[in-house]
Amino acid sequence: MDRILHSPNSEDWVTWNFFQILLAQFPAGWWGHLVSAARRRNRELNFPFDDRSLPTPKLWTAVRAPSDYEARSRKRMLESGNPEWITRARMPDPVEGSSEIDIVIEHEQFLAYIEAKLGSDLSMKTSYDPQRNQIIRNIDCLIESAGTRLPIFWLLVKDVDAARSYVQLVDNYKNDPGLLAHDLPHRDSDLLKRISQNLTIILWSDFSELVCGPGADQESNAVKRELERRILGQQTIA
Image (cartoon, rainbow, N blue to C red):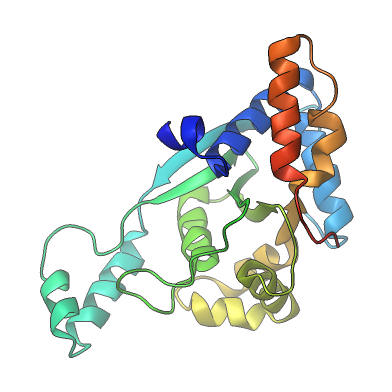
C-alpha cells in the first residue's frame, strides 16, 4: 500500500488502477480485450477461450515454491560446499520464499499467471539459486498450482527493448523450448512446449485507448491521466 500511495513509479499503483478500470468499464469484455492483445503479440497462441465463460482475476497472490523444487534445492545447497548455503539448507524454513504473482486468472480449463513490469526488469536469480530466473520460478509455481488445467504465463510490460532480460528470455524460450525444459528438468517436456508456445509479452500501451479514455468525473479523469503518463512514457514499441 505504501508503494501504491507514495512511489511515483509504482508498478502496484499501475496494476491496481489499470485492472480496476478495465473490469469496471468492461465487466463482460475485459478478458476478450486481454486475449485479443495477446493474439496480436503472439500469433501462435493456442488455449481454450470462450468469452461467455469468464475467468476470475486476482491481484497479488502469494504462491509457495513447489515441494519437489524445495527438496531438490535443499539437497543441492547441502552438497554445494558453500558454508552459507549449507547452514541455510539445514534450517527448517523453506529455502525459497513464496512468489508474489501480480495477476492470477483462474478458469476451470486453464490457469494464467501474468507478471507486471513498468520500469524494472526480471530477477535473474534467487538468493540461493543463481540459475533460477523469475520466469522459471513463476512457471514452476504455475504448473504446480494448475493441476490438470493448462498453465499460461504472460508478461505485461511498458517496453520491449532488446536489452531487457524478459525480452531475451521469452525469445529464447519460444525459439527453443528445450531451454525451458533444461531450466525445469523436473517438469513434463510436452507441457513445457505448450507453455513456450503461449509465452507472450503484452504492452500496457495495448490498452491505453480502452483504459485511459475520458472518465466519469474529475477524480477518475485525474487517475486516468496519471495512468496514461506512467504507461506511455519513453518506450520501445514492437
